[in-house]
Image (tube, rainbow over all chains, first blue to last red; front, side, top):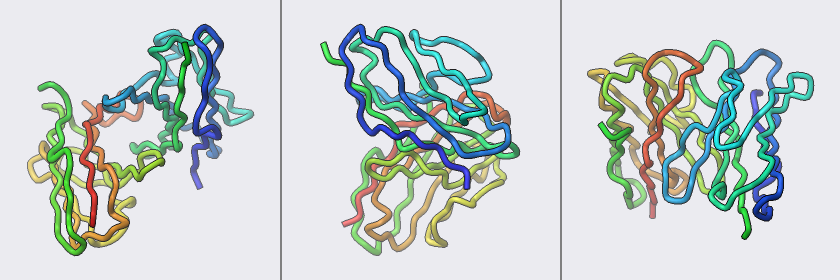
Length: 109
Length: 115
């Protein structure tokens, strides 16, 4: 079955420290991969997608097809990065997202 | 408009009651999705519309759940004879086109509590 796994429910780091939010997926084809973020009291919004190879707010994510991973990274965490982060994929031939369970990132001062 | 709008924001229903949740997508958006998010979980897909056509309803958990989008804009998710396990946040999202890569815009959600 298609699945997205985010092994950490909570990740706490100090401001200025590097951050890596893990995401592994189980799908053998070529899914589209995304990271969505939800800041406190705000709606879920797109952070980045693998096809764009972009860096948003200092975050990057590299698709590793061999390890079926799409980890989210930032070299220096900021307090405003504290939020809930969801990894999601869209399997080929469909339009829906399959989400992971999310990781809450807390950046401590 | 300002974005995807959902109403009501909060709904408390007695077990066995019927509820209707409304979603106003961004004007002109072709694709519309409903997701269910239980406490501590990620959103789970319920159903997908392309304009007025419901192309995928594979995620609806039972025949008590019904969704419609009769004119290809506003959508309603109806839950009949609500059960406690239906308690969750129901999210609506829309996309401007049919693409798999375009961004989906989410509403604030409706928090349903069944007592």
